[in-house]
Image (cartoon, rainbow, N blue to C red; front, side, top):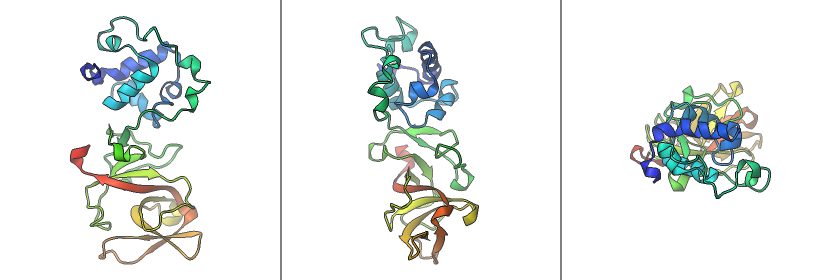
Length: 234
């Protein structure tokens, strides 16, 4: 029956239900999705919510599908307990149910990487592709320095690395640096430097010769590239 719901109206309906439960965005969505700040755009109707994410919210909060479709009956299924009252117990420690990963259709150099969340922009949409559902985001890659591993225009799946001391040498990473490294934002292979406080960034394309060496402390965000998908898979 979820396929019969109009997802263009689900966001405002979820907001109505959230307010009925007297819950904040974090309380209502925090145990379901990792990017809670994006739900403001979903709730005001400027972004369409994904099918998988919709199902996770409906299942988690035991929302009445008939009410979502035509306001028939009550918003909640009466035979289940209220989740909000149970949040301080085991549910608050559960892993997020949703694995829909946001896609940002922007050039890396134009993105903002400041603040508590990895990405500040509102995603164009969400992708549910099981092999990369543990990732942080999907991003387009431009330029030829990583060809043929990644061709310009392809979509890469990246996962944020929180411990910069644990690096998979020889793998591709999205590196975001501060002014100490000229605010560089680039995708390169990472290699170990003899000085443990530094990293070597290397292109794949032999036309882009020469390593770039950066201080670890200059790196403000680091994401491992888990793989790539075609635009037809989005």
